[in-house]
Length: 148
Image 1 (cartoon, rainbow, N blue to C red):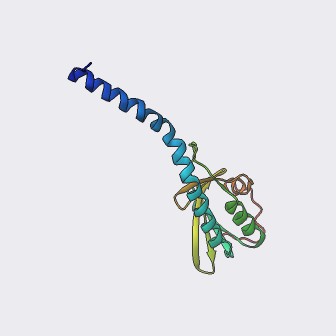
Image 2 (image 1 turned 120 degrees about the horizontal axis):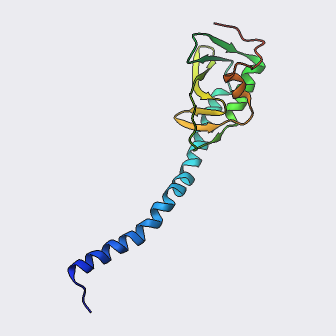
């Protein structure tokens, strides 16, 4: 039995669809599985850099006021950022808070975020300790910091 050229074309298209459809469905799952280790790696590298921070300068996009965190407050923020987890979900979030980590005058890196969502080195993370949320909402205890 031979197929007419039009039937051959339909058969080829059908086989391509049958073969490619499972790949299209599983691609996001596979991509997430590949990207997560990279996100973890980048966060670990960033966390290593900021562990030596002696000061954090925090600011808000809607305000010209900035303030510094030192001592225990800075350590809390460093620990919260370092314990964040990779997150690929989509949120309605205005990245309105920025924290710059310094060791002396050297800027070690920046984090922007809102509530519990952080943007670090071009990747999204979720912070569950509540420290970043307190920083964003202005309710973190600032005992050793000062307004700049």
